[in-house]
Image 1 (cartoon, helix red, strand yellow):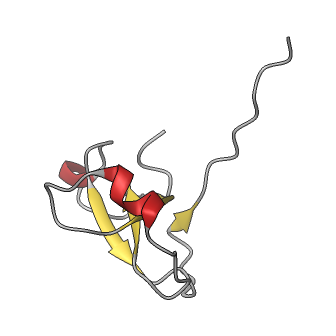
Image 2: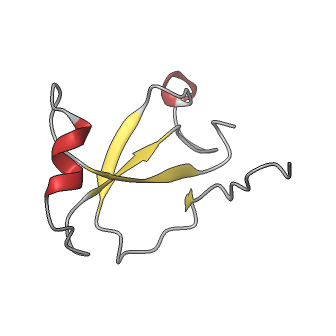
Length: 75
């Protein structure tokens, strides 16, 4: 799915290495930078990969940022 738009992630942006369990213990603030992954069209092809990681303020908008809708399968 990489390459269409940068995908918003719920994770707070922190330098590596850090433990994701720490994010669950913190009170999340809407103005904290969140992780963007995957790259988008119009960017250098070398960063259009799942491992690409950036950050931004989630209150900002950009046509190159989006999100993926996920639905659990019916049983």
